Length: 424
Image 1 (cartoon, rainbow, N blue to C red):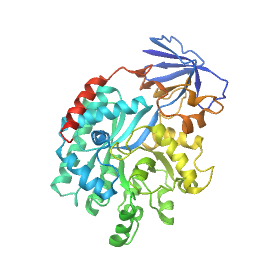
Image 2 (cartoon, helix red, strand yellow):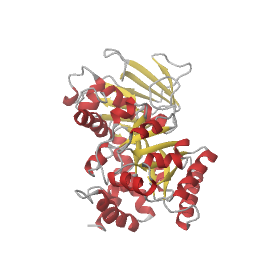
Image 3 (tube, rainbow, N blue to C red):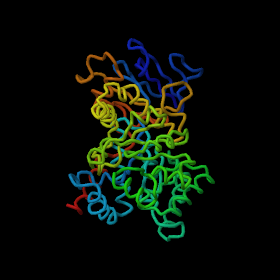
């Protein structure tokens, strides 16, 4: 199968340049040079469109779109333990599937081609990705005091079963270990996850220093910061993505500035739950690898990475009173290449020959994008995500001229409304 994208402006190239991009199977095989024996099954006219890498959402909980606008304007602890957890406990596995599908619709429509997820419904995120063509890195949320706890053992078994299931159905997914947080996982369990990750060469993801209470409680109980605690348990020696990283000590930056460690900032969720602002400008200055996530639709309340890019740059400028804090160019890199690198997907994140074809097209014919003096600035400061017209994942067109090709949207909306009716 071949796709020819004609006359596109590739983001990051000179403003007056247009290019033809050739895709064979799932790879970019030519830019302005037709590959030998190329046959186009589909031609996309991109005369008034910007071509860029798909966005990479490095932290979310896709099933939680079922709780969008359900628990708002309450403090974090009340939001999580009093509102969200009781609903989670009442959801079925099938509910989880439809929640994932709803999230995937939103992510594709706003230009996300890969997401990293912490799930509580084994197999459902994997099945949703297989059915939709969405790329994901899936982790089963793990909780418990010790590796010997029945609940922890069950969740770990589910995690490895999910990996086998994903491989068996050819889902476009890779997998990670997902201990939830230091306040839901005991020391022995966290040490065990670090051991497993090293033994099996697996990625790890967990929440870190999301709230002031988490930071202060760790100091009180362990005599160190959450980041230092993770280092003591061996988790900073794994390939790991830490979600949030809002509260950091001077020493924490040094610990996080390792090539195997990434910090996934979640501006909207942190702001909405009144948890503060991750110190992204200092992270970048100190050499910390930064990527971007939305968190769940229950706390964001969207999965729109264009909105997240906008907030990331704008909030940091306002917070630091520095107009150069997290520029548009840095923001786009954080949301694309950095995200791909964080997830170990080095063939994603840029438009180059040889890279995997995870690409999006932005329709330039929107008043909020005109005049187009600087496309990177326009996409971070002016775009809303609604301008995404076409989405290609792994060489497959999953949205063409704003029409989804792999998902029956009305079916998803019908099923999710049935679920929501139970909680109204």
